Length: 310
Image (tube, rainbow, N blue to C red; front, side):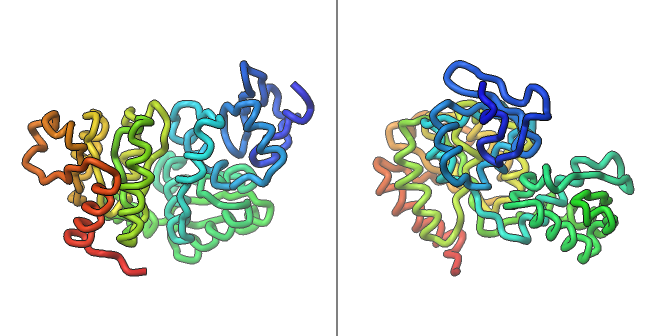
């Protein structure tokens, strides 16, 4: 381990005074960063990140794993490009809701205060820097959704509590979709289906004016957790490709149906006979190639959901 490795390669936070914040492992390093959270990074990517600007959303993506107690993110050359291609771009209004939810998770009971540190916690809301998180806090306070100690705010210390209108706002969005342009995609993340995602599902949804969203592309993605549940709630509708018959895909689609979200079902032709009997009554887009899927999915979205104009 070198002194250089005592600085987080992603957010550049100095880790020297934080104890065992970086440990050398086979082929890479494990960092425990107060900004990004805990993650493993390969030696190759570690060197790349130190010599190039880092997309701030990568820090937010890792911190989200830490926040929701998901498995340790592994940043390797194998996964890096896929991760970067699929990081979301949240609007300011969406970041305000993410911040309100982060405060809610830290609230012991209605009326209790929550303390956060902007210098460390800004990735929680996918902010680019602490100043953006402070702006979002002030915006929520101006909307009477939270109360905040503005004197401490000048020191980037956030002492806040959710107001009654804030709880009503959270209740409203616990059922209604937050992001009316987001489409949650449930599918097997097997490498053999990568081309179907990139050249079929993703461009079809984009062409129809919506934003395709996959939780991430890690091997353990079949595990259902709180983050997936929240993301389904937030999405306008879902595309569920049941090729390879993953149980997680069926679970996620069923949950979306329970929320009255529209689900568009897809399956590869040679797997149609394996579709679960409980869902066979739904019309499925049956595809052979990514081009088949792209055309059929685009047309069905436009016909059933409606094309979203920019």
